[in-house]
Image (cartoon, rainbow, N blue to C red; front, top):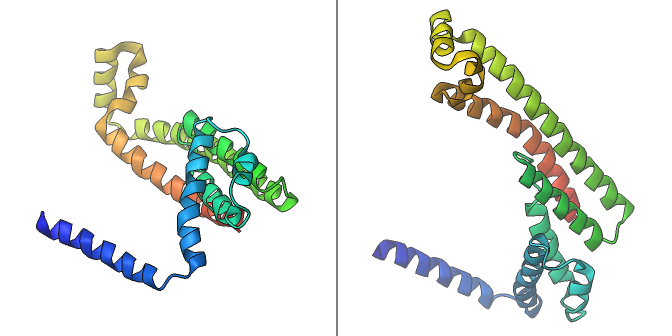
Length: 194
């Protein structure tokens, strides 16, 4: 316990030492980026609808940092849609980025590219799951298939997904699929922050 506290204390001291060398501009950034993070969080919870109005409430000298915080948080909410809620979250974040950046043509183009990646990922995930399930079924020994059919009746195929081996192998296959799309998504997220 003491080691963890000491380590945390040491890290805090290192940060404090680094701040000692910080310029007033660095300190302003450290102060205002979290304000932007908070605004973005409220936007994602649908408590705020006009991001630009929230930015405009800040001092003119702080607005760039507030926008940086908002953009950073919104971009973090753009993830591969592994479920319907994740897609809804990502699309809301993309809408916020468009609103924050004033609908610039370059930003619109990147947002559209991200939307395409998300849509293609959904289709690829569904197709991969369908193919995986069929392939897994063909690998099962005939005795296991007969046993499942006798125990569960005609709906045995819907129970296939509950087999631990199926779940483990699907998790690995999905991870490989995610890695392919994640790299492209990360590049586009960097472009949104530029």
